[in-house]
Image 1: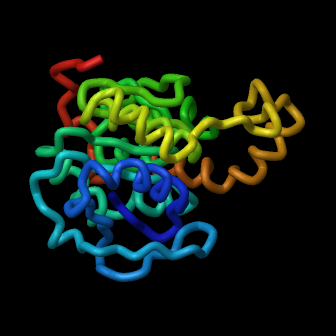
Image 2: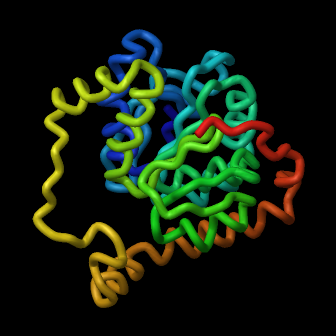
Length: 235
């Protein structure tokens, strides 16, 4: 599970809490260097493994989103790490705007994918992905989830693929994941135009910088065309 400055902690902690049981001794929190990594709300998570020490052959490669997304889309070391580990990983996955980082690494070209609603339809296509309005999207060995809270749905869906639906249902019950939000405002459609505009104002810097980073991908040495389109589907 990738950590980087400016990630959204819940993007990591939610999936980690549900998936830790699948890999009790082999779940790595990876960053460029071992130690505390600040989230976009200044809550730090501890990286236990560096890029250099992360095993080469992974079952799952996971990337969270967050305010630091655009910086990671431009970070050569992060993108090189993701490309290398994705080449052998069974599952290449993300939550929220983590899919934009995968896309910047050329890993979503030709794949159906989702992201946070603020960037799904405007930024993913710039990275060669096919945007899908859904909570969790499986396409081949790529698994992407929508914004923040969708990380729980992602973890349960992936756990079901890994260990079976009964395992995932048990994990859901242990977590008492039975959401009944106090408001119907979890999507632009449900929230309505006024609330959506307020949310867009909060997210504007993230989306603007991510769009710039996606555009610059085509002008740098990180050409999307270097990554082949998917050869199979596992829907």
